Length: 251
Ligand SMILES: [Zn+2]
Ligand SMILES: [Zn+2]
Image (cartoon, rainbow, N blue to C red; front, side):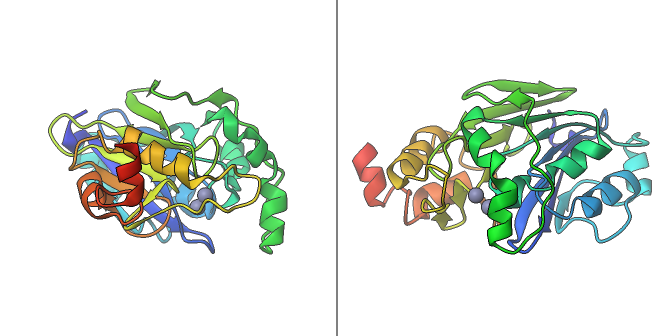
């Protein structure tokens, strides 16, 4: 896809300040929601009407006028995709599935964790609906074609068993990677969360073998905290970067 065709928005949502990403092909309006965990009404209102608070970061139109100037009259949500099943990322998927009659993609090794979303949220004092069940499976190294959008899927276990990073390739610009809680700016996801299968050795192996080969200018959209790039993290991340003990171990 060309740089100008890719429309990306970040919504920082919920008490855990989780990044929900919305990716749209400006040529066709095909839209995918990544990690619809919270504040789904805010996201729906923006996608459908440009109303309400809107995104916290975006590359692309921010009004009907600018969208129409690209020759697009409306967006069409065609699928939901999740990096992993922690409740802050997946808890409001049922509300999105009520609104959109689409498939939901999750790696099957997170299915058990997903079944616990409502209970886990209760421990934090949050009320969530009965957990959704993913009807489509992500697989390592698959190319996921959804309408006119195309995603590369990397299974990156370590924060959870089924954690995945999701990449959109851009022909004439930097690619985008939706990293969930696998990789953060200057950090990595926790490996001590209950029922998740967290394991730092596994996590660092995932990042070093699956993410470091990606292009250095790839824009990373982590599940929490600021955006970064693969190149910056590879050279400076204290946990998994080239100077880290983990990197020395796997190279
Ligand atoms: Zn998580
Ligand atoms: Zn998270």
